[in-house]
Length: 391
Image 1: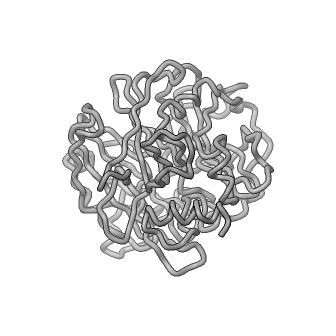
Image 2: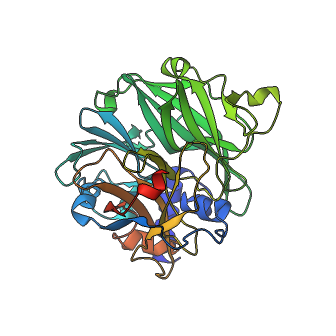
Image 3: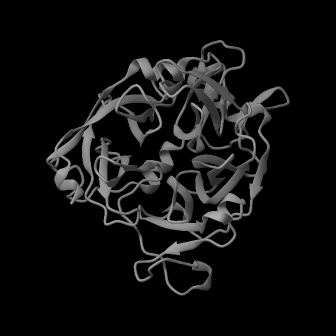
């Protein structure tokens, strides 16, 4: 048996996962969700655009703990008072600090809390749970399902986190999305190992993963994106702000183009309308004051994994065609996959901050190439005239 196979077997056994194809979130992102872009995607840039470049001085923060040896996703949530929550999917954790992934445990999710908004000067505290002396996922209920972090939002003094539920399956991928779960943390100002976590009732709708993108408070509602697990359509669901602040998510309202407000999908009156197509499970949305529009950032598809943006006058659209603004230098490399393009508007030190992740289909390489599987940070800025965009 080859040494790479032995390493793989050891890691998988430590996680009680029976199929190697369950290994990384990337295969769900690209095989299950991605399709070819429309002709408009990555079209010529408008009169204004986004210019971005690598920011290795900032990315070094993800290498600051010798026990944490990489993870994907890299979703950020502003906790206020200069603190930022980072949430990662499958992560390598090495409590012995050997510096090698072959000696690490691979857990389904981890988190970190950054102190200081400028990543070049901030500190980072990574966190996971421990069971029987071994690292396990931070968000973990046990059983035959696991969680990959989707998004989160601070509601007053409490933190609401959305998670994708995943279970093993006898299909080409070895796993499948199985809905969503929300978690409530009532003391996010404390260190993560002291957090009080409550699992919330999370009404399921077949095929939808609630919590994709970026949750936002707007017009008296908590507005949350939801991805269709069967294609790349993205929908909008909402709750009254008062209910959300109380941790009550039992009556979601789904947006449909024919309604002025929300609708209760459980009543079966109509199927919700996608707010945009050609989305991803991982993207971000923010309101940009200079443009006076909403800005969406995501990665492209498997063949063209550029970081791209699109804009809209409202969360429900209409959204413009996406435009590429940064082509990762790793693009086109053998066996490499690029995904999880996101914006992080709470970070400082640059006008704009973006991230993406580089993974590989070469199972041995992920253990030996420590340049892979850490979030990559970019710094950017808007260029050109945004006057036309505001009209």
